[in-house]
Image 1 (cartoon, rainbow, N blue to C red):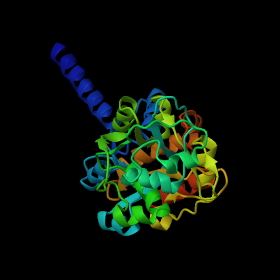
Image 2 (cartoon, helix red, strand yellow; image 1 turned 135 degrees about the vertical axis):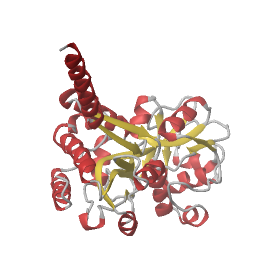
Image 3 (cartoon, rainbow, N blue to C red; image 1 turned 135 degrees about the horizontal axis):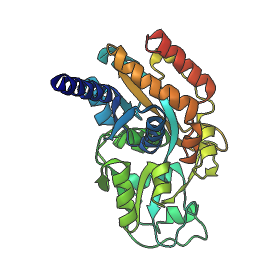
Length: 335
């Protein structure tokens, strides 16, 4: 009887461990949405007992890992083109919308004091404007004291969807940038130093005097970084904010037949923030069991995660887009 009881106990432990292993979702990719995915995961685990293990390694890493099928889902702020989705046998849908924000470490400046035009921003990252008291910056910022110090540009060192959003914006607004550098998750930067992840860029900007970098807005808020006021497509200087990101996304036309492929940069509207973007989830078509677990998490987030997203200054997807995504899941047999 004792042996039988020991055997039953061991069997129970083995079954329990199997269930625990089955109750973990593994994802990897973009650092842009990491704050909101982490908050959602914490709340989801509290309600369901299911864990989300998300590696914040950059969009390039996320795309590689889902292509290699080493994770249940990949995450990328640079949407994968429809032809590439087909070639890699992937599904794609957006999960959240946010904004990429230039941030600076200039003594005496507070958030929103420094104004930059698209041309001035491109010239700084090209290395053509190299001091804060450059006459072109002083002309935009009349009455604002800007120091003589050399500008240190901080950019991403890893393959990054945040970089893809940022360089797509710069390529859209600056012909010089488009010709000399271009756009993508990784580019040959003309100037500056590299930091890994949004976290790395935020830390460098915080430490390096007279630095400028770009991060997702949640990282700017969490690190108390000084954000820049940018001139948008309509010629208005705007602060990054929930409403400004929402305005940028308002006119977006999403197409499920193309895996929702879309960029949100340089959107029209007086209040639109010019460097907005969605973060996308990638799934392997041939993995319906794993996909159903992932979809169940994001469906829960669509139903229960909006308030959390808004607190972190992300824009939840509109109801019509969420409904479209659920139809997309159904058509692919994972909802």
